[in-house]
Length: 357
Image (cartoon, rainbow, N blue to C red):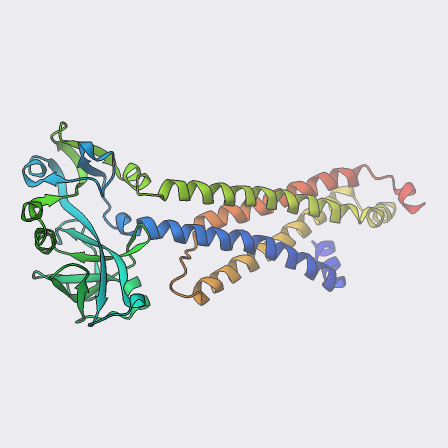
């Protein structure tokens, strides 16, 4: 322990540069992972709020929510511990009259039973109590400046929605979510097609699904449903491979770097062995020093990643997954220790007389 700390203390610049390199590598991994996770959450955060176990879609919808259309007579045949009817409608909305093009907002209008298990929690304001009222996500409130009491206009719709509350972060397919009641949704849908007002896109189930009309509906787990969000699986797989290869290459680079760095001190270790310093003591010092350097570099990377999350604009999708980052940190430390172990094996075989010559 003393040897490891003393060497760092004597060569501050050298070891400072090493820690900086380790910090930059770990920060790159953590930052890209945060961007990938943030983008994934933009697709699914509103779905996670449901805490549903099963999603029922129309049999002929090819497991697509947007293509699913369920008549009320069919939906009423579903029996389960808890269930909620759900519909979604892509809309363009704005606040005020004669909006500029940049003031128009693409959103997903979520309609569901606001007394069911799938209802979002209201952070500010109140829950929807009447028709033509809406809840907006925190993202909409922060990015677009929409406030409680604002009247929202919808493109190609006569109905206006009054914002009565703000929920937590909720996005679907990269669009911010606006919540309303099923009655208001039916009113919006019925403006162009009166027969469509009694249709829903899905039936959400929490707990045991006892029975449902299998000729008309298809049952999906929540994981399967999320995987079928347009573009989600391809996006997750692409970023997953990218982050995976980045972690793999980073760990190998750090392991090789620590091995080469240790081997540069072979002569010093040889002199220490001639002075009677045990090989086991030198080996422990190498491992402790490696763990200390990598630990400091990785910790600094995590800290700066956290600062980056606070400093980034709200429109940048960035979310830290502390569980994943902890595993990556552990992998970086373990692989660097493995690289040092190889050098310890070489140190054990050093002939002190040859190093002196």
